[in-house]
Length: 621
Figure 1 (cartoon, rainbow, N blue to C red):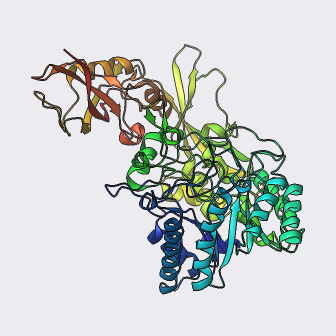
Figure 2: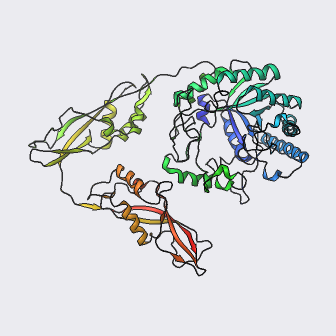
Figure 3: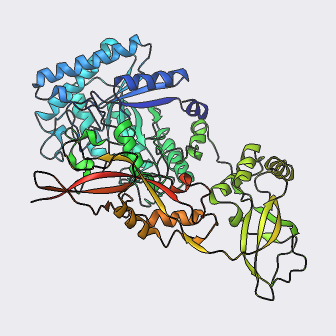
């Protein structure tokens, strides 16, 4: 909240669900936006002076044009009783917020109700309810019940009606129906996504609809949702909602700035334009990395962080959360449309908020280069190498500084590179980096070991900071290495054994078998042999040599039991129950970071990994 406030954000929109839990008390996910959660978020926003819009979905989970499901507790009510329930629920909500000292500055009555809400729909939802009796009357009566509750208990709250897919005919039709039925509200709220239907989702059309709302109906106008991708990369394993280049604006941080700038100019073209809410600006992965889908899905199921949890099944349609009979919930499909990257760093658009009203020009960014050189060479006397390394030779930057480390070389032209960024660059520099193989005239093999200049880590850091003191973005950073020539040793080739520990065992609740697997024990020997066989080629190398990160990447691809990659490893042993049912174990790799779990391991050392084992029914005799 402080980051948003410091950036100039002055209003926050929070969705609210009625009862987002199943019968066992497990959340449906999506942030668990029940009243208690929303109230706490609102309190946090108020601490930093931000106003609050509460988006009432009037559903227990996501409401959108295709999905407007009535809350479980309200199902089966008559039209009159449902109107009463909406009124009482809304009235209680307003009073709860008042007692907590939180003002609701704006309330959105329903979410994207273009095709109806609270189960008021026609056919498959494609028929327009707003021009068909008695549906438009039922719908507007529900809205009037919600409006009445606010007008009685919170008169200063601005009330908004939220529709989507900007279309002049449809927006005029809906607003005319609201007027005909004497619906009391203040603001027309619209979704605006230029990557979905440029014919309506463009700045000129938004300006025209805003003008119509003012001139014909006397209403204010706000963009309730907008967004643009800063990348097409998938950072958490859940497929991105926008995974293609939409055109119109570039995909990237600057494209986000361009999309929002054009939209704000359109909004400010009429004096009834209030502003816009970006959706959903901070929904970054729980754990970044496309191969962490299983972990992110687990967090979605147990902590509500995913866009949906499998526990929403039964209330939310299978068509939304299932794919080919398997759960497709968990993670976030929006992580490439946020205003923070997958590691949580603010993107350029967040810096634009203070300037949207007064004008703002993005400062030019530049990437500094790095000059990495050899300043001293040791142990090279009396060795006659072919094409030897020489003092002052320049080294390849990418060999010594990773892509993530090179990101710290990017910044605003002419501004000083902070000590924190310099330290981050230093921490990413390779020390004791080994060169390619060199040979002498007799065919003996050698390699160089490159060491950062200095004796201790503290001295090396101090030398690096002193060498680059006052350095600005656009200038060339300097890095000094010493090189020591080392003769290669003849070493035997060995294969590292894999040790597997089971950290989870599933499927024994209603099944009794002899000698079941238990948490903490090793995988069955015959199954472990199949794991070892699959990775022998990858884990074979010179004895005592540290296993590289590239080798671990190859291991991750080769090892069986990786979700959505190699598939489950099926056990060999068949268990037969006294009822004639047959079972085997399936194994899934649960070590998220094999390299991290085996730090500095060398060829010949055991590789420790963890698997889960799940009992699987095979057949019935």
